[in-house]
Figure 1: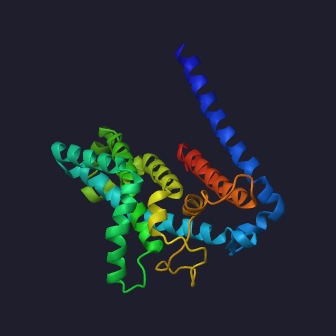
Figure 2 (figure 1 turned 30 degrees about the vertical axis):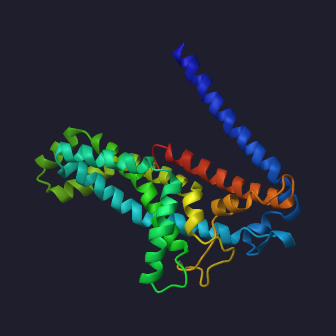
Figure 3 (figure 1 turned 90 degrees about the vertical axis):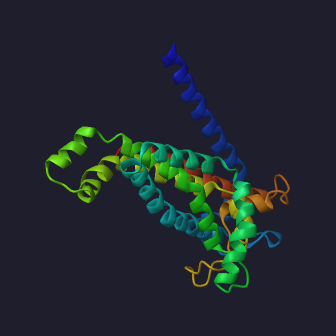
Length: 277
């Protein structure tokens, strides 16, 4: 009976995903039919002129997620190692509870904190015309995905068998050698899954990013300039979906943005569930 329910749950979940992808594809088909995949490499997004280039938002999404990972991954792994291997049990539980509470804060709250604290700080510190930029989006996302990576890395380190640790001691390895030769390699599959799941959240985050990124549909000049207002796929959908009439080409273009996001996050989730990558 239990196996039957498990199979039914898997089928329902699979059906829901297929229905979602089918809806997005059907609604975005007029856009793909009219413009083709070439618009993925176009930099012009002017809905009232029927120009719907995707490239600025794709580049913005890439940079925001990359900044978040560069900051969050080493910080989260270091926190997991510290709490698992060095902290007393009481402090370890306190840190984990704090991370879980951090993960439960609504994204709009992060966005408001970014809007009223982070943006003025960046503007004054870096002497910018505005604090709205890709760096602000990446910093905010790094704080939001940090708990996911840290908790999963902590669980992965806990699963390393005591015999493996004792073998390292018997071989005369010091703590740093055991960390790099035994603990992290053994825990890597779980850590990798946490990183990929966090990447999926970073790509799909809307409200917090929309409030701080600036929502300017232009490619940064030069492309690695992170201190200018930019655009992401999620921020574009969140800001413009209320203005697009259902069935219009503008609406279809936004559904195409949603389809790209859905395919990216599903691919990342499938990759996260692979045992060896």
